[in-house]
Length: 324
Image (tube, rainbow, N blue to C red; front, side):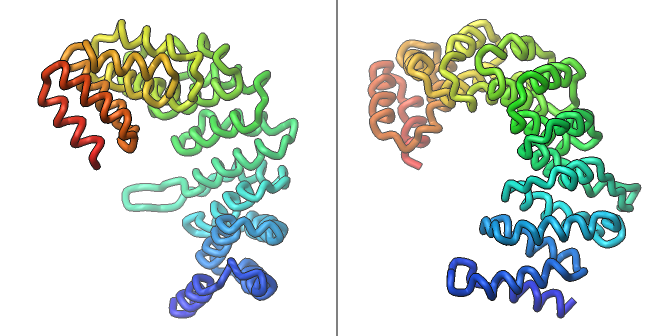
């Protein structure tokens, strides 16, 4: 253990920003990758990815290929293989065969009360890495991961479909995933994000029914995905949904999505609620606009609106949010 700690300490002491030390750094990192300690390999691979050391990408790929056949024994916990796959993806590796193999890897390990699969993140990173290679068979491998037992793998697989840029195949896969359903609300939000990326506003009809989902958490995830898209053509969709929604928590999420969208019409709508909306609507609108707590002009406008309303509670709320 002491030897491992010493090796990790040496890695942390490397000056990765000094170009004069590039050769020495490369030798140290290459030597660490060539070793057998999976914890050291994981830390080394992570450093290479974080620092975008593209010259060491072949070393990452070689290490992945070397370790993969015996990963279940040589990489207990799966940290090394996952770190290798992640950094290969970050460095835009084109090793599609390695990614395809990794996307199928399952590694069950004993824990108290049963077993867990420690390769879930590995499969997810391999799916994303495979998607960005442009391999024509990429989505064939990724499709099965949309039904993976592990939620993090399913989320990564949806992201991989988005990364592929293949609307012709990706959109039907995403629609099938939505129709199939999922116990994890975030999966629906990720599907909406991917659909909007691949199909733009034309994809609205693909996910619009989700706004009527029985699970409020699913509706909230869909609303937030719409807001994060920054697609101003979706402004009316959010406003219309808010006006027909009766559940306070859902209304709050819809207003937050409007603020996130940052369109002129949604921001004006939020301000109008502060001007003459109900007490609850004004309160929720201020909460939503709180994501712009740094905006002094907005703070002044909202304060004036609430002064005109003669509402000291809302004025205090604005001060609490915008003075943080």
